[in-house]
Picture 1 (cartoon, rainbow, N blue to C red):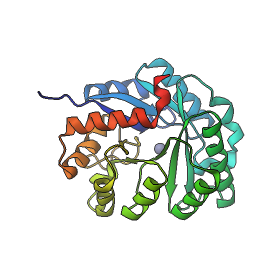
Picture 2: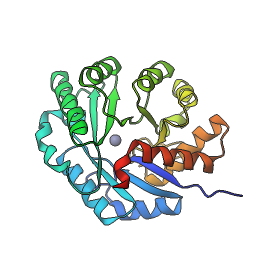
Picture 3: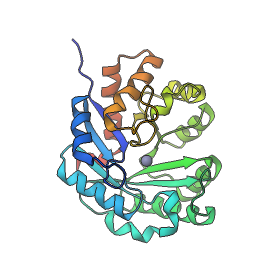
Length: 257
Ligand SMILES: [Zn+2]
């Protein structure tokens, strides 16, 4: 029996703030490429509301509400009224970014902690962005306590960081970086990750996979990410699509409600 791949893009930004074409065209192209579920991610109040609006227009789209570490100075109170909105399945992306450090660290940390608390209070999944900040990410998660469903978005570590996150119960979500030539350590993490904890995403419009590097990414490319990992692991890509799509439902159980 031959399988038709059905992918879930667990992390994309199709808001008009991020892409001129808007969502409808991008989603239509992705459906033709075998993507049948999308999670559109909020990064501040505007993009979170837009994510909800997009999700309300498309039965195969769900939304998250979050404040990105870049925008931490805006205050978590700017997004918290949206968390009870329709089709919201997660809080985030939130976390720590010490690479760009667009908001000071002493503002990023409490904003991250507050969003962990929001996820737990509302029984929502937590979507984490972490860059050059592994130890503080572990520290905040350990002091606040992990939400039941936690996703490390665009996981970019190696096997050591993968184990730290997996030991804490997180799902690891892999992006197009796995296709980059210099990403050998990340590929090792993608091979180590248990098959029931692995997710795929585009993070579009960012991080277009090979051979689309240098152009805006889009959800249609999530199958390229998934196929790269399936090939590494010696799994049929369509089977890997169904495994990662089932994992997406486990990671974001509110998709069912
Ligand atoms: Zn993102």
